[in-house]
Length: 114
Length: 113
Image (tube, rainbow over all chains, first blue to last red; front, top):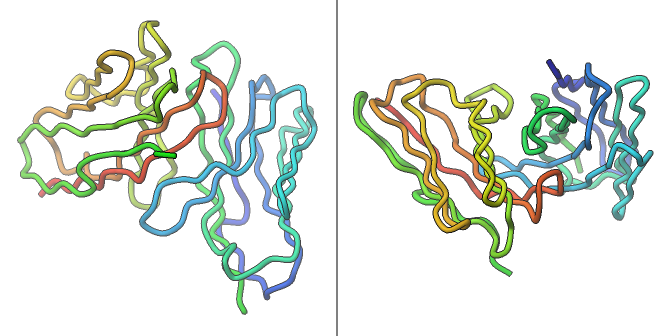
């Protein structure tokens, strides 16, 4: 059974700092891995999707990497801004089961201080 | 363009009542998902529809929960005889196909008194 873990649960950084959010998963037979952000009281916004055959994806100041052999993904945020404050969730989907069955971590709550 | 919409945004009900939650996916998206998020918990998969295939109901927590998707578009999640532990935010998402990027709606916050 796939389990997804995100550490730390919360992170506070000063504005302008580069930071890395960590995601680990127990079953390396993933179909893809996705990163989302969730703002308080709102739904999830998709950030990046990495297919199992890919190593990384980039969008603006965000870069997500995937290492299936070690069961890890990281989300790198460059030059953080107060607007980046949100909870960041990673989710993995596996082969063999429903491709829609994303298994989510509990998230990392990021606070960027001005 | 229009995103995923859900209604109602908030629902307060009494224990034992039935509730229906609605999801309008992005037009043309063949895949539709329901998740729920309880306070302090991660997102829990409930059910997944892909085109005309039989839905994946493996995440439904009990037989009080059911969902349908009419005409490959709108979906309704029904919870019968609601219990206090059903209180959560119910999130719907759609995707152009299974395994592609998910687009989430704003959610329905269900409170069972």
